[in-house]
Image (cartoon, rainbow, N blue to C red; front, side, top):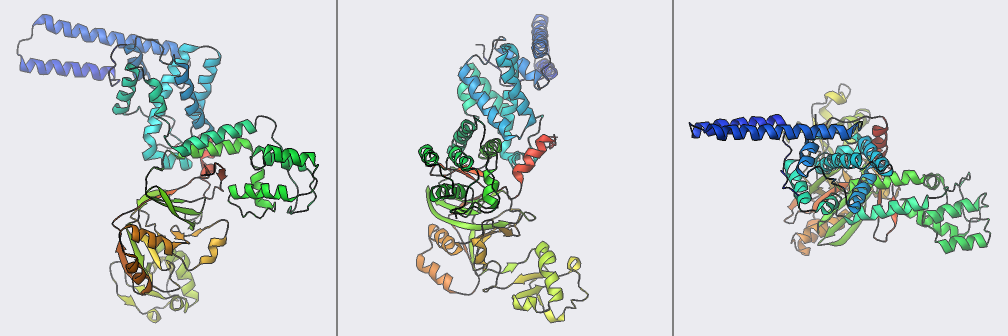
Length: 562
């Protein structure tokens, strides 16, 4: 196979470069033999002619393929490989189709969905020329998508959807592709485009399992009221079959229940429902109430879409760091890993839907003991000042101080302020809450540099951790096991345990920097496979999954590249 060029230059650019080369050559050598110059001109003329023929061939084969985007690059590539098919290896083609299929199932790109459907159509009709051309054009688009994920993924996968007209991949990625083609390693190249991550692989297996389970008509189950032990079931077979298809009842267990002709909601069914509830973030009480019914009613197609969407999201999270603190927003939990070992798991409280905790990457830089709380302007205006205006003792009782400005530490006596004349929007001061048992940050604050002023912290309101859904904060992350988190992070950074104990026993504010700054990943996964191989789902608390689906169905695309 002829050696491929690493770039698909536009013809006009190639000609301009040639003229420039000739001009420079004339400056260096005042006299250029006419025969040499004529040969160069003829060479470029032939090159332009070949490129023109290649483009004509592309247009001829493409015919009515409206999705073809990269004509010049296609012409360059096929011209250099002698117009032979690129996708002759069925294993390579199938692997590429499988990756496209997961993107199509996720519903993040109507363009990729259309491309995948056309490829399957051309394969079924044995139209191999059009299949080959579309597959290569789609490969360029898919490479651009994979390359753009680190920068644009937080928009694409959380509401915006993927831009339908992606630019060409970078010169570096095109060069990597051309080398793979030259050395007949296209299969390895295509494999490299999917996440090398166990989470992604496990989600693909979950999709396959769900699709197999949905291969026959899906059972239905509905019964009004809360179903508890002993409740007479109107349709026991519907419940048994559904729990069996979803994997919460083993096949032999389902067969035993059928053989026994169970009519009442018994302990075996309740145990299966408890497993189901655990996997869906519900309190595992075995009672089938409204939330359990809502999850039972979720169609297999919807489950597959959620699994596929979250498989794409694994491209964003760097999950292979040996030491990392991971907060999964829909799960309302935090996990701390140090040296490839999980050392702490804790419930967390995240931002409510109106004040969302952002998806972000940072690191824990310091731990603050007995922190002050410098109240953000939005919280001060929306939450605190309205209370202070109508309850003069509110600021005193909650240990707030009025500070002149963000550039000053001068305190303004609260009793000197005429609250009748104060307006929340025009309030000229700022508020700071002093350390103490009522401080909103509790006894520990964990600083992590970011543009959103988000941090982890303790809280005096421990009762909220008992809730199923824990989206109550104004954006920052409250940690139930904040005391343990502080101890572990400090000792991991070399602070002696005795010193940590001394710091905890004090009431003064103290900030301790961390030598070992642990990475923090605040992620948003509504579906994943846990360490026991069980597929977990969670409520789409910020409706990002819903927004992605709607943005594609309504053809609402962003203009990130414009």
